[in-house]
Structure formats: C-alpha cells, structure tokens
Length: 371
Length: 144
Image (cartoon, rainbow over the protein chains, first blue to last red):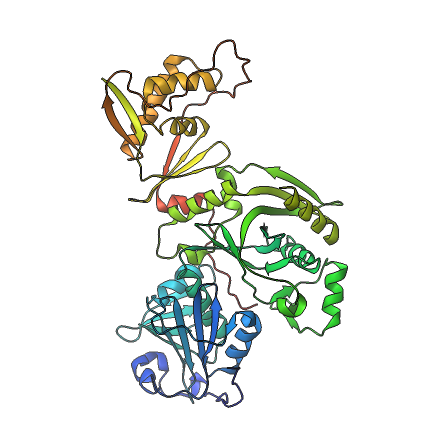
C-alpha cells in the first residue's frame, strides 16, 4: 500500500468574506454537507508509533505528504486488527467551500478542545463563545473567527488557515497519550553495544549532533527528537522521526553522508534553513531494536574539549528529564514522576559539555563501555 | 507492648542519591523525603519502634542527641502515619523487626558521619508536583 495522492485534487475554497453565512455559525449544517462514513477515494496511511497505530485518511495532499515525510519510518503496510485497542484514525475531508472536516476515531475518545487547550497552552489558542449548541470553538488570540469548532469526534477546521500543524500535532500527541506504559521525552537516543543512551539538554544543546555522530560511527540510531522508554522495564524503544539538521557543528562523516545524497532543505518560520533526512537513508546499517536504558547524558553547553562528570541524581535533578506534556493529560502526575525517579536511580548519569563532535562521541562511547 | 511502625505494603518508593520519593497509588499522594527521612524510611522494612530508629539515626548522623532524634523520629512517623505511608502495630516487648540495624560497635573504625538534619517530609498535591518538577506545559507541534 503506497501513498495514493495523485487521484485527489485539492479543491479551491471560497474566502469566508464571500460566503453568505460563516460555517462556524451553523456547524451542524456544515457537517451535514460532508458524506460521513461514505466511500473513500484513497487508502488510509497507517503509521505504527511504538505500540499504537495512527491511520491518516486524508484528502488533503499537503497533510499526507508532510506526514509521510516526517514519520515515513513508522509507515506500516498492515492496518491494525479491528479490535486493537490502541489506534487512532484521523479522517480528513475537504469541501468545495467552507471548512475541512477532521474525524478522530479511537476506542477511547478524547475531548479535542480540552486536549488542545491543555497541551498547547501558551500558543495563543483560546476557547471562544460557541455559535451553536453542543459545539465548542477555538480561536487564535486576536483573530475574530474560530480556527476550529468541535463536537464529539468531529472537528471542523477553517481550511483557509494553516490548520495542518495543529491537527497533526493533536494526532501524534493522542497516540503517545494512549500508550500509558511508555514515557516520552524530548531527547535523542542511541544504542552503543546494545546499551541504551538517552541524551537530553535544551534546544540547541547538541542532541542531534551527538546522536548522529555516534550513529555515523556505527552505533544504533534511535531518534534525535523524541525518546520512548518503557516505564516498567526501562527499555529504550526506537522513535525514528526524520532528522532535522540545523546549521552548525556536525561531524565530518555526517557531513559526507549529507553530501552523498541530496536531502531537502526547509526554511523555518525563524528564517533558518534545516536539512531533513530519514534515518534509514542516512544510516542504512543502523540496526534498531529495543535495548535496556543504561546511561543518561545531560548536555550542558560547550567547551574546548569534551568533558563529562558523573552525578548521583537527587530530587532536584528530576526536572532535567520531564516527560512530554501529553503524558500528563487527564491523569495524575505523581505516578509518572515516580517512574522518572526510578529511571534516574537505575541508570548512570553524566553531565556533559560538548567539544568537537567526534571527540564528544568518543567520550560517550568510552563512558558507556566502561559501565 | 512496643509500638512498631511498618511500611504500608502498597507504597511505591524511588530511592535517589540520598533522598526518596514515595507514592501511595491508592490516593496518588506524593511525598519527598530528605536524607534523614529516607534513612528513617529504610528502617521500616520489618517494623521498628521510634526508639530503635532514633538510636540508628544517632549512629548514622553526627551532631544529634538521642532526645532530639527521638522527638524528630516520633514527629516524622506521625506524619507518615497520617499520610498512610506507614502502619502501626503493637508487639510484645523485644518483638521488633529482624531488620533492626544495630549501632556500629564502639571499637569499629567510625567513618565520618554526615551532619544531621531533622527528617523532613514534603507531601505534595498534584499541581504542586507539576510545578516542582517544572513539567513543560506546551507540547511540541511535531511539524517542523
């Protein structure tokens, strides 16, 4: 089953100002115009994200292509069994005019408005007064019209606004949330001699540089952005989203690999350019299978020479590694933080100041092998 | 009869360097223990009296008298009991737990003992737990 994108055309929509009555004033009427549960003109793209499945069934080509670009290594040819409990199907239907309809189907439904308001706090999303009974709406602060209106599994989105990032983020966070036995962190992960290494640090601290330098030296690449750890067994599980390379330090070998093939460059809203590469294209020899987590590296800036210092973690250190917010949604944070504390007490912890990429990778290799 | 204190069997604990985190899964009560409270907690696996724990504290930490240690231990045990982290039993005198850790013999070479600080339990509510650990409130958008 491949990506079938050529048979679906994107239909131009009429701007809201030219319509007689805005869709969000009569969302039930807008919903009725869609053929809910009707036949589809394309396949559903299934992604296996650790133990859960995400089915993206989208008439919007941009969303499908972007998702395939970012999560291509999670693609699976087989859909989950009918009664598989951890799956989310996200169906996106576009209309000739008016909103886009997104239907989320999962064994356990999530209130999408509450989910967005809780997870993306600080991004300017606010709940607005609904025009219609039983519907709830979200706007971006300062904008008069809603971005979306939702009722049960149905989400009507203004197709003239950039809605895809929010819907994709909801879907990914939802499938992570449904995997309660996993802890997800903002961290890079590698396997060295079958021992898992979790590399954390602030944005720009060098997680991708270190993880890709180690992978280019023949170690297993598990991910550079999100780490997945089974909380009971402390097993590190691959989470291989496409790698986004910022400009800056990278090892000679990684640079050669990037030059070997033409990888797409993307301009980000901050004006910077990043190179996007799939791990399997960059490191085809890198085997990935779950390994026990043994070492935690906390990146703390840069030095002339790479330096590492072991530390015995205390309560105050727990904030160095906090699970992603989706894990806390609708549940008590206390058991989750206890799991994090157990993780800390079960691994060797190091503060690390990075030097040149190759030298830093050698230092980490030595640390892991000495343990 | 001796009053002995035992860990509540359902409590989950995560030992860190010197501190310990406790969780009662029944009510999601979360509690952080400082080093001396952690030491006290570790004495409770087989049941201990406040007196035996105070003695053990005096042999484990420097700068604390038996009177102060006993008063602190009783206060901490009361707190742990009220939070349902420990249970209380009355036993025949001498029936304390097998795990009682006797003070070091006087002729043994004494290592340098860490300074004593009264046992401190920090019970936290859910929102306090989140803010104490600075859990980020904004999810990544997974698009870029």
